[in-house]
Amino acid sequence: MTTLILYALLKIAGFVLGYVMLTATLLTWIERKQSALAQDRIGPARASIMGLRLGGLLHIPADAIKSFTKEDFIPDTPNPWLFKFAPVIAFIPAFVMFAVIPFGPGDLIISSASFGVLFILAVTGISVYGATLAGWASNSSLSLLGGLRAAAQMISYEVTMGLSLVGIFMVYEDVNLQNVVIRQGSNVLNWGIVTQPLAFFLFLAAVIAETKRGPFDVAEGESELVAGYFTEYSAMRFAMFMLGEFIAIVGVSAVLVTFFLGGWQVPGLEETGGWYTVLQVSAFALKTWFLCWLQLMIRWTLPRFRYDQIMHLGWRILLPLSLLNVLVTGIVLAIIHG
Amino acid sequence: MNPIYDPYLPLGILLLLAIGLGLAIIFLNGILGPKRMSKEKSTPFECGNDPGTNPRQRFDVKFYLTALFFIIFDVEVVFLFPWAVLYREQLLAGNGWFFFAEMVFFLGILTVGLAYVWKRGALDWE
Image (cartoon, rainbow over all chains, first blue to last red; front, side, top):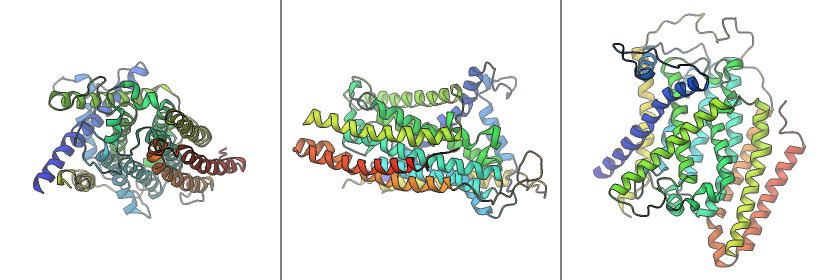
């Protein structure tokens, strides 16, 4: 029992607290640098220790210290407890999502539960509450609108998110993510992005809408709603929304990698164990970083959609397309095996 | 069952850790940060103006409608998962077209529902 808990803690420490948290905190800096590059600015470069600036990298600890020492402000609201715990509710789902994502071969997965992706879908469902409760409890019109927009947008794209994965389950016959990765194998032509190309783009669009980023960020649309559902938040509660968002970026990148880019598989490498495992874990890390960067790139390349355009895209384009994807996958598989 | 592969224990540990970390961050901030409340400060932020609208007003019924559609469609999506996992197995067992027809029937009902809400203008956001 003790070994069991220690083993689980080791995996959590290495993967979630190590890799994921490190990536998420670095992303706060990379996002600002990336946007600076995209807009021909220098970006963060002020924080320094004895003249040492490290290209703005010191803004990460500076921001952490600043958020921790600012006033934990609670506005005059009829729902103070909802207001207090909404950031925690927004933060937890992003964090526990990694439990079922395999980061290496064998038992390099925190929980090898058979329900796999159902857990991810359930947990992303909970993350809707964080934004909505925050918007409702803030007792501000701007926050309420942001919260409502976030809720309607997230649940709309959740349908596409689930439906676009049906094709993947038809091809790989499992909802456990480790088994999906094993069935994809080391042959690139058998990876999800080749066998389910349409599903990849549908799922990518759905998860970006789900994280309320990129062209789908009307929920916080600063030109209309100040900061949307977290307008009234300050200090660490505000930082938890941001941290949750950046962890969610890493999370959806890891899910995308797992389903569509072969997870930890290295092209052409069949063996596992020893140095091969190290190589495969690194492959997973690199692929996830690439997709994180891709999401930042998308955010700073595309202009924000209007809200009716978002709902139009979700219900009238992505949903019929994902239904079509299931149908076509069914026909193709029936022809291959029939 | 090999206890190493007990999947629920690590899940529980991670969940507790997430809740604990979340609460610890908030708690630490409460200790380190100053407390300077005032009446003006606790009014809703509307760019310095006095709050013009009551935040507890009625909002568009479309948000409720979207939530209803979500429940309908998302539950149906979940029903598709077991079917999708078994599909290839059933194909190889020889009763693939029957299994396929079942899904087409099910998706057909789903599509009719979507076409109906579409036609009624429930998906229009203006």
